[in-house]
Image (cartoon, rainbow, N blue to C red; front, top):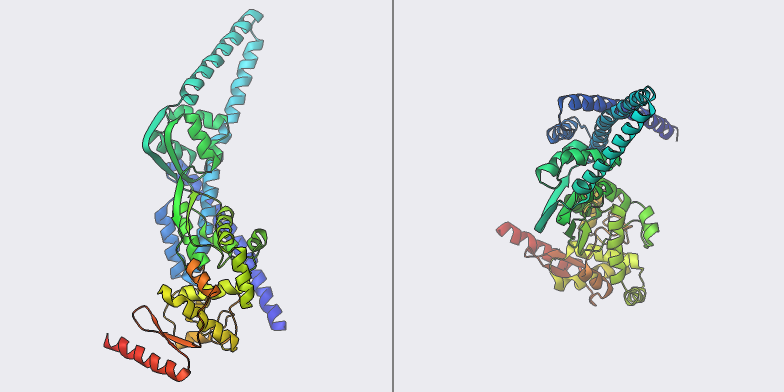
Length: 449
């Protein structure tokens, strides 16, 4: 216990040091942002981002994997971009109120120094100027400007870009009529600070005001078709949504693998692994992770009807246990006709209190798809079904409809073992002696190839 407390105190000291170092890094990033602003350079630099990833990977001594370090630095770099961008915007906008106040004060003193008739003339002139500006606004800002025919125009606004860069892009693609007025009204309505990264589809008739309103909501109107295949893990699904919808994959995975979303969505598991139902979905670019998870789990609930819940109870298993079996079947089966047989093997082993000895659970414990070696079979993990009897604590992937149905309606067999044939299928055995012969036949076939 004393050794544990000593190590924990060291960790606490390191945490404090890490926070101080990260804040120093953020200050340096802010100073870099000032230099970039003076030189007119873009905030976002993919070359610099790549260099950072290479540096931290090269200097990483372990035990953290390079991928884990990279995920941490993705969040740190994103925060640095935010500081650089906000600092640049504040410098541009902080000057304007001061100049405006000086201008108004100078004119007010001038009005007090002239006679009443001249003051009325000036006020009339000022009112006329406001009317002219209103007419210009109505014509140039509210009136539809562009007509995008066919599929329209898709504009991507990356994270970290400044408002001026967004305006330049919209002007270059002829999305807006007048960059100057667009920038003016963006500042007048305090919208330019609310511009959100995302993909936006401009089609049909729209005005500059429509464009400004759209890009400031952060709710993309670009509908994206996303297909989630069967058998992917939560982290693999998060990668797809990052690529297709611009979702923060680290945030998605953290929320899905935590226990809070399970409580919110009312699912009988420790996390969402196994319940993100594989299907083709339509999402708007930039949809929040929580909304995506709800949509996918709603699809699971719709499929796993009351009759299937009754069937699970007839087997003597909970819904979560059935989904866990289905996830292992999904990871093992390559031929649809074998799914129910593979499910029967695992149920037979559970009934006999035998370890499942499922290789996919070892891969899940390792956190990667790879060839399993004998040394891997001794990994200390609740997902090690070679050393632990019973099911792993959660599903190991998100199974599809066929594997779930196989887990609910397994074949009636006496099989306790199976081994790959090398052609996509498996050879099933009742006794261990038969299994050893099947393994030797498989190895001979592999050696001949």
